[in-house]
Image (tube, rainbow, N blue to C red; front, side, top):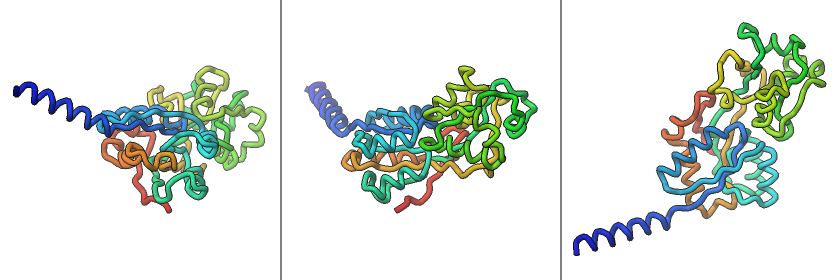
Length: 252
């Protein structure tokens, strides 16, 4: 009898636990692929909620959201698009938070380790320079700012090839379709540090990355818990050194 009661209690406990587990669909900027996968796995382990991730450029994900995509949380690579979604009624006011500051690097597998990134860019010793589309990708916009601030954009205009997002930009360089390119620090975290150089922060605007709760996630417990999780010590430990994890006041 005691064994039957234990089995019954275990079954009730299991069913109760499962009934509160939800599925969450998160739109994620393509510069944040690896950290997002780790974060979602840890979140699922802690809460039993399941998480599906959809990656793309911030601009394209924004367009999909306003055209009805079923995303419930948006991890953007900028602040602008989450702010717009709030003002346009596609995201909950007060839910926006900055979860990371991105870093941009010049990835150049063929450069000499003693060359500084500015020297490489001014050398004209290459035919193709890859950047993400500045209109849709914050890292592309930062790359454009760097070139303009250095006064070399016009000289390099014909050498620039654009990826739809930062992931495609990295692919252009890693496959040899471009000799060098501006990518996010997280993409080269496991690559020989002699093959890339950090870009000085004063050459471009800060890449402040915001998350926001979307309208389709208002009634999803997992969506709200995931945003809280991003501010936790567990998330901070997972965040790679290529990001500065921030917990800033939410914006109205």
